Image (cartoon, rainbow, N blue to C red):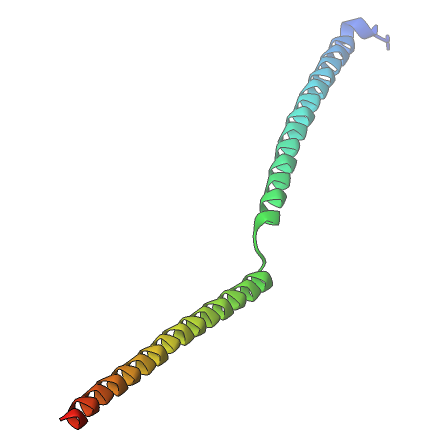
Length: 114
């Protein structure tokens, strides 16, 4: 049996094709890695934007605490307004009593002059 040279069996051509396929696959793999890196960088930027935005949000406890403070302020304001209107009523009573007293005194003076 005679051994054939490698060139005549087509092994060299097949090896060249395999090397070309491997080089092509490596290029495709590198391009895929670059695309994945760009995508992951975009996702990281998006996460950072969400974190920045989340820092601006008010937490539930802070919201409830602030809401309770606002309610207290509203109640104290209403109470102060009620006191102010009550003091106005008291002044009106005082003035009306003074007016009635002056009217009665003038009537009494007119009656006793006669």
